[in-house]
Length: 219
Length: 219
Image (cartoon, rainbow over all chains, first blue to last red; front, side):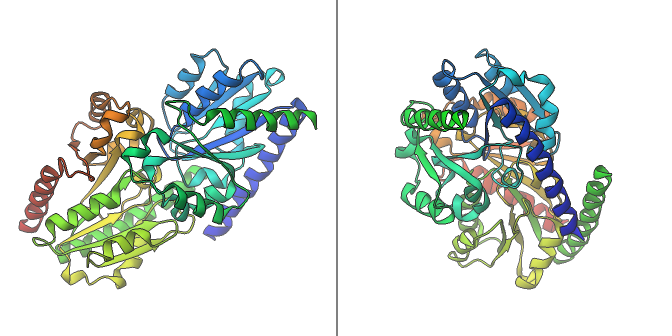
């Protein structure tokens, strides 16, 4: 009984996410669903990505948080359209919440839409929002046991961005184990090692992402 | 409709948590429900607490993880009874899961039961398991915006343990803001600043916790 309710919720979400996708395709909007645990550096990555790619693509951001507009304020400070979704008690974004954000965006003027999910290594991985792909951030202080403990997000993501590489000398993070376990769950995963603080490694991410967007827009 | 289903789930859990509490009271077992985001250092805190208090109290641990027995293995390596609950896709522990773990424990030989929840700053705060109190860990790399973004866990916890103080020189963590915002949400919060790596600050936590357990056992 419980399982069938959950199944229905996921099925209903799948339909709405597909409807969102139809709109995004029509408008040629490339959409990233960006996930991580709390404090891994999603918003910092969004800021850096905006600064690197804003002259190339028209960017907008949807921020998901339980409460507060702190992240949308950070993005809006860069002069980028940002919609904050406050989920109340919901621990993830779903297709319906994204659809509800559409009136706050001019969909005719967006090339890249970054959806920054609620900080949570579990639930967001279960829900599509109409994205081209899911990307996840794992930060070095979180530890190398995360792929084994939270496998679904690693399985569902196309990209794993390992952030806070600048802290490597001060934390005991077995990066080879983390990468090996992540690739064991999902051999198609593309991995970047970056520091949003120092900027190290970000150029590769910017170039890879640009190529993905250009290939989508050319198709 | 959706709200009433969620309400029923929470009500049902409340009843089961109360039943657990009756058993814990009868057996004089002090129970901590330990919560945090992924990788904040819950298991390290559990290990340090075991080593400090094992000669004073009989300790057992219930470990909650989506998958994997890594944390229970770490605790069992210390010679402490440990039960691993794998929640599958569930992002939190509830009263029923704890009850299901009872056959794996000898309840007549436990003074302190530490329930280490799934790493998640959102959902575990909504569910009682029969604990004396909830405690949460926030680590310095996660950032000082966490109380504002994830208020419920700060509101529901009796204790906030700020961990990874050894990383303070390398991260931009406004600890005064974090404490101010946390106390703004919950003025009864007791706060400890610790490093499970260096041991700094842990003695205060051990002494405070011992006093709590002794006062419960004397009542």
